[in-house]
Image (cartoon, rainbow, N blue to C red; front, side, top):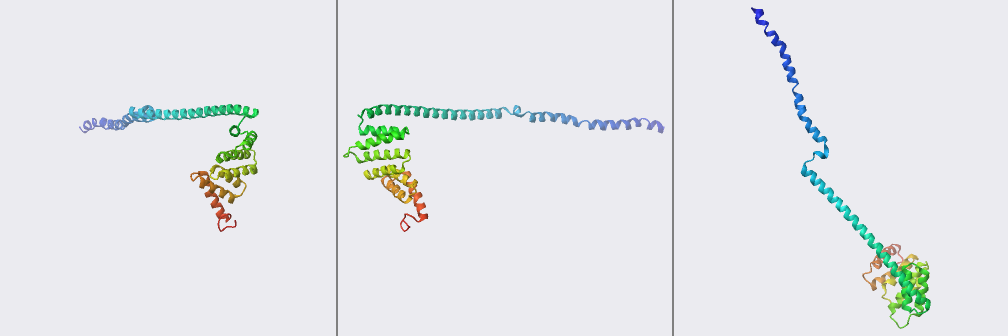
Length: 243
């Protein structure tokens, strides 16, 4: 009787481990459910939501449009400068041709010789500029506007600077300031020659004269401030100093 009672229970005891192993196989179902998430994360931009992708595309397009606009603006500015230079050069060539013909014929007035000299200055043909400006100075009427005469001497001084003749340039700038004491440009030019010639105290007085004649002259104001500081450190050329 006891054997009949124990035999049916033995197979049940052997089947129990199979149930536990089946329970252990259930987690792969959860792993399979997680695989689509990793695929989404690995897919990159293709998995971005629609609104986010559209905003990114719009921003990229706006940046490209901005770069294109800046490039077109630069090209337009460069084209304008090139055309302007071409027109200016053509204008100078035409003026040199007309005025040069009159100068060769001996019919040019002192004013036209001055204009021709200025044209040569702009073309950086300094030898011809000196020649025509000296002719203009020689024929300039004595009873005319002193500031106009000062302008001729100032231009001649600038032409001498182009030939690296600082002494001749200084003489012309001094003459210009004597003819027109309120001519700030000539004072600035004279100060520049003296400063480059290592005569800072004299240059300072010229810049101060230019600033008195034209208080808004940024060049004169800058050089006055610089030279006062320099001479103050040197103790030279200022009240109480060696000079």
